[in-house]
Length: 249
Ligand SMILES: [Fe+2]
Ligand SMILES: [Fe+2]
Image 1 (cartoon, protein in one colour):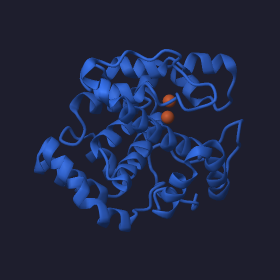
Image 2: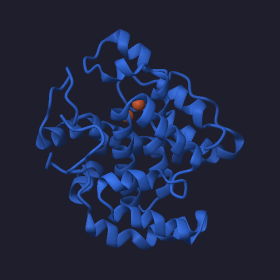
Image 3: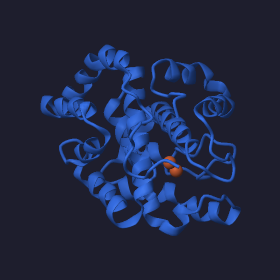
């Protein structure tokens, strides 16, 4: 079983090719959005070992203070395992943003925040690895919890994360919160970003032991990803080719 906080072999061996290729793409939007200093901080944080990366990610210069505080609560007071999952999915999303040349801060923050609503789910339930309908029903509100937690401070991210379970066979929530007028023309982009988060979430989840899949090796996970995302096989293939997803374990 993977450790909760220390990730000796992060799911993302640094894909140097992607990093080199896309640094320019990534610096430009970041510079526009947040200024040069923050762009440097993002770049620097990727060079650090995973343990340091966690702290740097949570520094207020890198993640909006509000989300950073929620992440700290998850780590220190609620469920470190979910905190580790959020960091890994955030990191995967970061690289997916680089690969697609898109929206890196939005990718990153949506990945980091996608399950923050699990702060409202009992920690004992988050530790439970066996799936059952009753547990599923208690877990489902985490998407609306997360949306409600972020919608005032990070509304664009909130509208992404509330969709991250909409791409599975039994999607939820059944009804999405209405998009505000200012995001109406961005609905397609929001859905696409949510799907990217869902793919990263699924990949990380498949690395955990559970009663549905057991503990899979890297090659089994790759096969499973292609089965679960039949319409996205080329993109999944790109993620493996770029080293963002890996069969190493
Ligand atoms: Fe979730
Ligand atoms: Fe998740």
